[in-house]
Length: 349
Picture 1 (cartoon, one colour):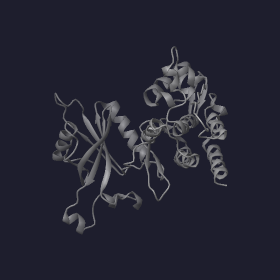
Picture 2: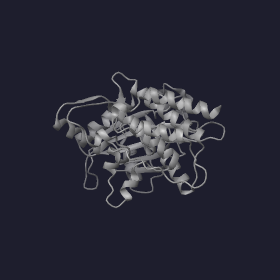
Picture 3: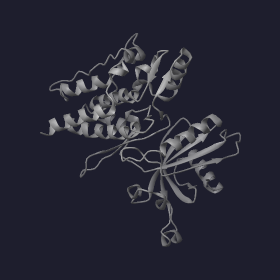
């Protein structure tokens, strides 16, 4: 695995400029950087376009020959490329684990990893990292579920209930694929910012869960206070606070953690699809309020809306069912899917 030195130099220059125009090799395939789509921490996400020369076209080579699923082939050669600057061996292990886990899944509602490369670089005064990782994915240019929810909230508008359920049903399908593994995997960071959307006038919206950097085998046996504290510390680093399950905030010294941590996050995400904000963030804006206490106690605060209610009471009860502070009272993903299918059937009849 590797990238050419010229490709690396071009990409490094792109990181420190406008993000467009450079070229990079991922293994034997070459891409032109079109624009910077987003960044956070030590990671950058670019819109890239594959560069094919005449010999590639004549021999029908290129990145697409690697794909097991023809639906992953881009019609116009554009993809999303995530570049991670790796500063130490611990971060390198995390990147390798993200690549390994991402490669396990094959489902239309989980973002597939199309190609990847990790290369060693020589640190300099301006460049402290020791490795660079390149991960190639399909591109979804209609943004994240969070961005779309924020736009609706700013416009004081709501999605139609059936539209909400169609999006949510896809998230359930993706998580079911993960939870059905033996042993089951938990995503551990289900949230609207980790859901990509593709919108079309002629088709229902496509929702795809991304970012498997926090994904781990779901089931953990906690048998001591030190193990409970270790889990809480890990969760504080890998699970976004407004969507983190209560047992990951305050873990008992004797507990069996399982994939129902994702069900909590899923309930929070459904709330956001409906109302544009998480069900517990209100606590951070209140004097003396505590996000952690609101979550541990399951204190959901429903928005006040003028006029007709945008969603029936059955939606609220559905959310509350998933947001049970006691994990053993929470449904599993199969139960959630049965219920959402009933809600869809009721709205369609």
